[in-house]
Image (cartoon, rainbow, N blue to C red; front, side, top):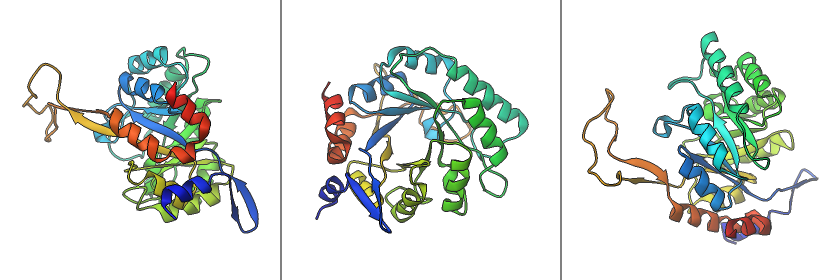
Length: 286
């Protein structure tokens, strides 16, 4: 049986040690760093976007203007906003935590369409690479009733199951993870364990190298109900030659930009269509 067929057959219910667990229709989240990407996700019928800046560096908090304009234009796609104040490790001092709390307050104060769910993506670790419970608790509290995703800092911890329990206890809605591997396709064994351990308490959002060629297999082998995808391609600026000047001490491609690719996104949506169900297919056609 192919991975795609197996995935389609498995979406109704699964059984583990005699307990039947209802499997939800697959949800897709597109990682974007511009307004156009969010609008593309909405037109394609995706359920959610993660809005960031500096994706080439792993993602940072987008500007408040960026978030505001996105929320002005989208009508129904959910928007999860990354709150990460700087590059580098995820051990934060008091000033950095206060910056994140202020960013969360500013984001959640913005107007948006009634059908748009706005949430926040955060993560904090201790110097021992464990979940920083005190900081995470503060960030979750700052989010109030808004859904919270704990981001891939989770994959740096030493015990995924223990870390999952901690994050769930702290009130996060979901965890973005590759199962601790370089990609979700390589981390399927751990992802499957996390899905079982999570139950109904917290959602496992599988991400990291998810493509049209492997998405169906990831879902079939793990039972995840949400995928985090990028489907990006590089393009030169319109109307001019690529710039030749690096603006940092490292070689940074300032002459081209990475954008969501509609063709790659369509291929990925088609690859997982059996798991998304008729309601998602109807949204994608509208």
